[in-house]
Image (cartoon, rainbow, N blue to C red):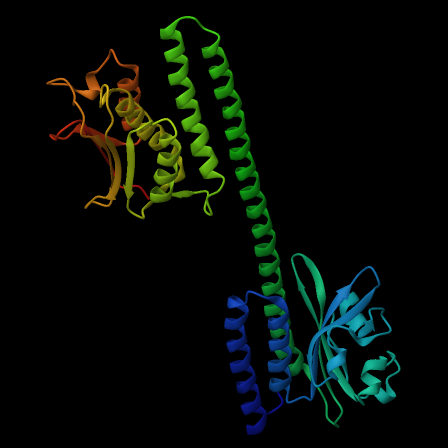
Length: 381
């Protein structure tokens, strides 16, 4: 067993420390080229060498591209190439998967000396393969112009770097593919919501056309109500595909935009919206939008017979983390003992009650001038 000198032991301990620190960097890295550059710098430091380079395999040309490195002329990085055939030390390591040590390049008979290395006066080199489950990425190579000898311990140190790089490359590629997939899914979701909105607009137009063709006032009113509900759903989808995050909606912006749309049919009534900056899951958007649409439409029709007044939509975070949404007016109010959850003769109130249950909320009437509907929704993630 070969005895290690104190200097040699210090070097191996230093190499282990460098490799350990680089492992943390490899786990945190978000970009490949900076990580490769850092690897060449630390690998050269640990090997006490003048040169180090990371070579990326270009299969179409069967070449190895110098994509990162230290010690080389600046114009070499990203431009210089080395043959990937078996007559090249780096190519041999790539094609066979075996590390290559050449301590006397000037007398080497196994391989040719690549022009890049000859022009820099390289006398000795060691190559290890960078690979992972996706395949061979390339080669990590350390070079020096001085006399000396690379040994098996150096290969073990370099292979540690190469293994960490291989894993990091695999992770970064997987993350990049996942990001592309998520962006595509996001695009498809937005496109779907946009198309649904356009399709609903067509349905609303057909209902309006059918209403105009009817001589029966009750039919016209029923079709107008149906059209308003379809337009409310279309408005929700119009907002959904514009949201930066398709999984959640901003209640303030959502309700403000919805109220702006409802103002178009409010006549002389003043429709006000006051909502806190709260986000809720996107699956609540349609029932919440329809809930507000029904109550506001009802207030526009019945709150101020023969006149006009104020209709308010409010939303705020409740103490338990849930959401409280209210629609109120200062009009004629509701009949004594009116219970919105038992109003079977009104389609609008039945819809409101069903929507309240979909929203996992508790609907109540608050004592006040006019009508004051309040919905308390349970906390949602």
